[in-house]
Image (cartoon, rainbow, N blue to C red; front, side, top):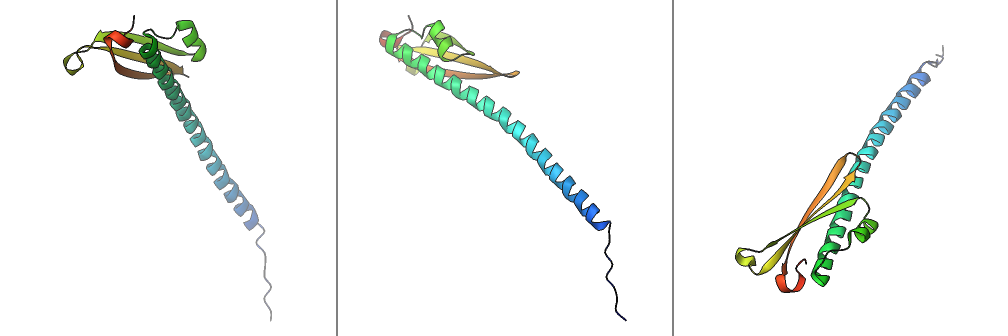
Length: 128
């Protein structure tokens, strides 16, 4: 006597539910990672902008003896604030002028801050 193969009608439904739940979990994890990488990318981009603005400010001080005009600075780097402090060098840096730049840019609720220091000859490129 020959045996007949019976199909299990409920098996396809269970496999389909499991496959959909696995795919939903994978999509959820990828979406969460995408948001995290987006936030990191925004912070790194703000840091990059602050570094470029600071380097341009230092170059302007070294070349002309004065920083970039604040109106021009805001136009070139919107949202970036720049605080410049100068002092005389000491020790091995005596005779030079120390330029401290602190640049900030707000990204969402967090502040990105960069601090740059450069010594310039007091006669040539000091801030006036």
